[in-house]
Amino acid sequence: MNSMILTIVSLFFASAFAASLGMVGPDAVWPATKTTLDKFDAQCRRMSVPDTGHCLLDFMAGAGTKPAALAFTRRLEGDGYLRALERHGRVAVAYVTYPFRANSNEGVLLVNGRPPLVDVSAPERLKDFWQDSRLKTIRVKNPEAEIWASDTGRPEVAKRRGGGRRFVFEFPVRTCHACADLARLNAAFDFDARGWFLGVFLAEVSGAAATSSAKP
Image (tube, rainbow, N blue to C red):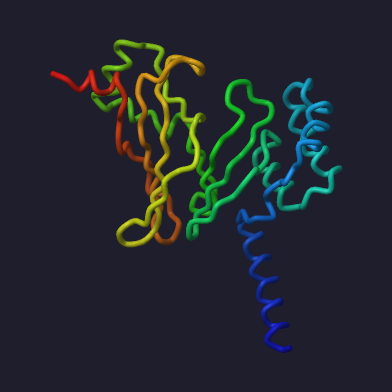
């Protein structure tokens, strides 16, 4: 009996400590049903920024959403909510839905590391990739080409030598959201054993345009 009480107390304090650090756990997921999302859509869809964010938070609160899920949406300034979470050691993969965005409504964040939130689709993290000769050639031939990092899915996760994790995401290179892929690239996001973000690296470039640009 005493050991059970000790376990419960330990879990309580561990949860409180994680919350104080802004750690994202399973309670941060909003398990909204289709019926709930339909009601949300009818209530908030026609609003404009910044009212959309307030509407999402108010709707979630009215639906009895857990405080952790509301806190996560507040961190995103009402722009989205956590749909699913996968833990990989210290760092977790957070799958986010952005209901008000025009092109891509899904996104991926790497959370619980240092910094506590890394947006894998942030353009500033990927801008150096255009120094790669293959991507340079693609952009010369297609000046409007961009890395559509928002169009990604579940990463490949591997342990790094010396500890930590590597998260590899596949991103398309296109001239528009609905256009055909000019190439696809693998971006590796590395974290050390303590959860420190080490940076993002271009691991691979593939596709017809990338192959042709590599020819002499």
